[in-house]
Length: 119
Image (cartoon, rainbow, N blue to C red; front, top):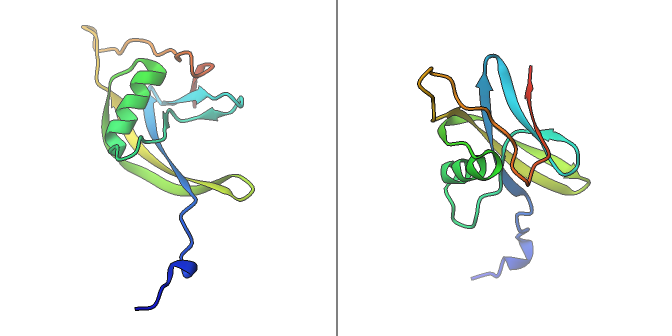
């Protein structure tokens, strides 16, 4: 059998799992360490299911419990020249609701600078 290892190019794109949380017509965004606004989420641990990853990231970044819905979109983004990340976005909703039916406020944890509801 012919050795094809020299013809195989390893995958170099990282993957990032993001959640789209929309409440009152606005989408939740986090400011990252580069001063850019992005959807909450992050990279899965090795072998981690994307839904579990997203729930963990929302808990870590926002101290929020979520219900994960279907995939909304998936695309490959060049974050720096020659460096790509595949971003998979899921619909999410907050799982916790108070007696009034409203959810508690969301605030960024120490790893994120701030939150914003974009319209």
